[in-house]
Length: 402
Ligand code: NAD
Ligand code: MG
Image (cartoon, rainbow, N blue to C red; front, side, top):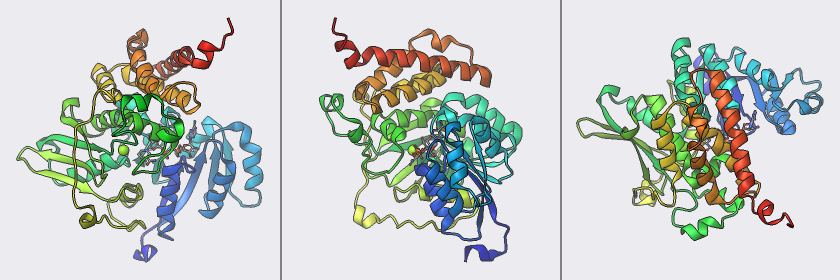
C-alpha cells in the first residue's frame, strides 16, 4: 500500500547500519516496499552483516570503516553489483552521495565527520548520534543553518519534544522535560553499583540498545548528554531543560508552555516509533510496533533523579554551562572510560569520576572554535583519559610484583 501513493521513493543512507538504530531503521523501511530506496550502508567491522543488509536492501554502496576488512567486504559482495568502499574518507563519501535522507546512527564522535558531510549538502538528517551535538554542538548547528539541512531528532526524548513543539510557538515554551527510565540501577545501592559487571550494566530494563549507550543510560551520562543535545536542538537555556525519572518509559518528553499547558508524547518503548516519524516526515507511517496499553500500565510515575548515585548528570550540565572545550572533553573522556569499563579495566563508578576529573584539567582551556580545534581537544582528552583509566586499573596497581 505504501508505494501506491504515486510518490517517488525516498532515497536513504544509513550510517551505522549494523547497529541497534541502523537495524531498526532498515526494519521499518522493510515494512514499506517501494517507499524507500537505499543509497549507502556503512558499518565499522561487521562485514558479513553489512553485506547481508546491503544485498537484502539492494544498496548501491556498502562501506566498511575498518580498512583491513575491505577484501572481506568485496568478496562478500562479489557479483552483487553493489559498490564497496573502506576507511574514514569512504564513510564521508557515503554520506555525500545523493540520498535525500541520512540516518546518522554511528556511535560516538566517529560519527561527526560523515554526519557533517550529510548536513553540508543540505540533506534531511535523522540524528541518532547525539555525541555529535555533545562534542561540537554550536559548530554543528551553525553548519545545519548555513546549509539549510533539516535535522530531525531520533533520540526518543528529543523526538517527543520535537513532536510536542508542533503544537505551539517555541517563544511560548517555559521549559521541557526529558524523561529517563532510571536504567538498571534505579534502585541499586551505591555499594551494589561499585561492583556491577559490564553484563549487568548493559542489561537495560526497557530499551534494547548498543553497549555504549546502555552503559551511558546506567550511569545517567546519557541523560546529561541529552540535556546538551536538547539545548542545541531547541535553543533552550540549560535550566529550562528538566530531567525526570519515569520508570514506565511511556511518556518520552514533554513541553510546558507559558499558559501552564503541558504537551507530551507517549508511545511504546521502541525506537522504531521515533525512527518512523523521521523517515516519513512530515507524514506518518506504520512501523510494525504494538500499541501502548495505558489501561494495562495503570499509572505513570515521575521521580527526581538521585544526584548522589548518578553524578554524571550534574557533570554534563556543568560542561554545558562551561561551554568552550568542556563538552568535547566530556564526550571523549566518557567514550574512553565506558570502553575501559566494558573491557573490565575500571569499575562502574570510576566512569563518572574519571570524566569529572578530566573536566578539572587544563584540557577545558583548549581552544574549541573550529572543527579542527574540537578534534584536537577530542584527541588530547582521549589520551589523558586512557592514562587515567590505566592508573585506576587494579590489575596494574596490584600486579606489579614489586
Ligand atoms: P550500536 O553500537 O548498536 O551501533 C553503532 C553502529 O555504528 C554500528 O553500525 C557500528 O558498526 C558503527 N560504528 C561504531 N563505531 C564506528 C566507527 N568508529 N566508525 C564507523 N562506524 C562505527 O549503537 P546504537 O545503540 O545503534 O546507537 C547509535 C547512536 O544512536 C549512538 O550515538 C546512540 O547514542 C544513539 N541512540 C541510540 C538509541 C538506541 O536505542 N539504540 C537511542 C537513542 C540514541
Ligand atoms: Mg534517549
